Length: 424
Image 1: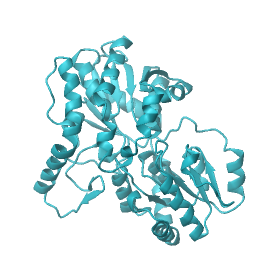
Image 2 (image 1 turned 120 degrees about the vertical axis):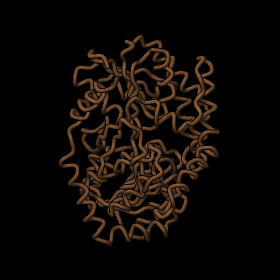
Image 3 (image 1 turned 30 degrees about the vertical axis):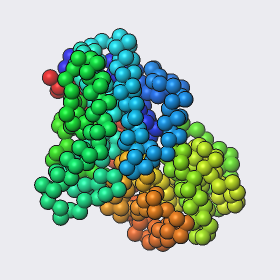
Image 4 (image 1 turned 90 degrees about the vertical axis):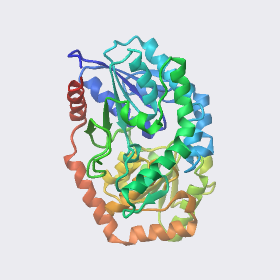
């Protein structure tokens, strides 16, 4: 790699849970005096600019919100096809933005895995030098080793390795490649480039470096993860952190016992059933509750005095005042509950949420209840178990100690640059 400091192109797609880790890393690199440009959805451009970063907006707000309004993106089996319905168009726009940016050819792309195919084309065209894949959650890295969780299915530890490989081939050929490969190769043909034959292999091996943004104690490195691999930590960062709690929330917290906090994720517009069950279950248990959703329409119309709705509160500020977190299992929410040292109940909908939930259960600091199985009675029983058994609270406090010795963010940026300097 050149001795000159590179221009970093930080590319991310998805919800705020996908945005914040990359904004955190971009901010750390900029603090080192590096030139950094963030490429992300237009919907988040103002928030990125508010963090003091240069931003190139992708797409438009209407198309992004239309995607969020599609309930299939939260379905365990339909989510992948729903999200990648116009994948080639999105990759094409990223490629156009890179080519028009006029950054030096020594630039480094740090990107969400779904942006890797566009970055790979830019590298083949000589527009960038290197690609770093930012891996937000363990399940984003394909493995045949334990724990092996693909969507809602966990493969038992006794299953032989040959069967595990066969199962992955079945998943890729029957579910992933039919959706993704055509979109990726359409774009590659347009650029006169050879097609790729496996989407998952392309995401794993096209990057020059993979950066795991979660610690080893949460997910140990597996023998079949891509190399070189740089291990990081949870990039606990929220653009809105540091703001005082809203008056209504501060008054609510001061008025009684710490509440249960419920969130289905900032990007989930289809969680009305989740919040209806939350209200019913907390009423059965006699618990106070805080319901977090940007969409008031998802929240039951009538709320008792023991339940408060808020559109958004940074979890880093809120969770130290909570008794437990009930959430979808996004990696950012999972990490914030671990840092706060409170038990968590994960209700996975899709994506990496099932694997994150399995890891929390294995750590002994929480439970899982799939969103598809939610009912007021079942949620109340599971929450009762979580709250009544002291072992969950003790294990949550134990896991919190990891964060006292976590490396500073600036260390991560410096380690990344050191790893890049070792690339050919």
